[in-house]
Image: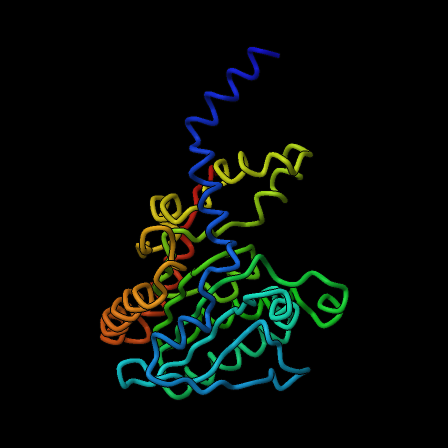
Length: 281
């Protein structure tokens, strides 16, 4: 038993368990800026559009037309609440199928009118309730993944907090995927991972390190394209400064992407995601 404990301590040290869990804690903070905080600071104006034209409107997904440095863009964002009341209204940032269908409707509208698309990702995952499954949760996410690849306009996706599973990936198929320094992006939560692999959710801290869910790890593996440095202590310490950094990078990157033909955008987008990960034949 003592030998196993010593081995575990060595592994934990190599995995930087404390560092990984610190990122998880920061990403989940109630004080962390939400998508609407950034939208209000980054864009000159924002007109929200509602509804999926199929079932209803999902408050956990905010979308509409905005002006970025005088240019029209479409914004699609997952929105958490800043307190319990807001979180109940926003379903804790967990979209229903109508949220994904609303997002896709707005992205296809942007494609029609030649507007760049900017997505803000911040969700623990798609809502897994019975009613969501009845209305086609899996199909809604899958359709987003399939159809976004065919869009002809530049797409930038920014993970600002939690990026959980397919619920995040549905808005993260983009020409350029960024993460804030203290955000996380993973196939499932560390608690879920620990519960499945070790049958012990209390090992979530260890799981966070094993999963390589931090921005720094994901950039190293080529899963994301850019890490945006946050103010000391986290983005919540200076929302204006963080917004300014994002705005400058957005203006620069959209200028680069707009110089490419839609055939180049589609081919590079497809190739980017096809080359993520390694496998043994």
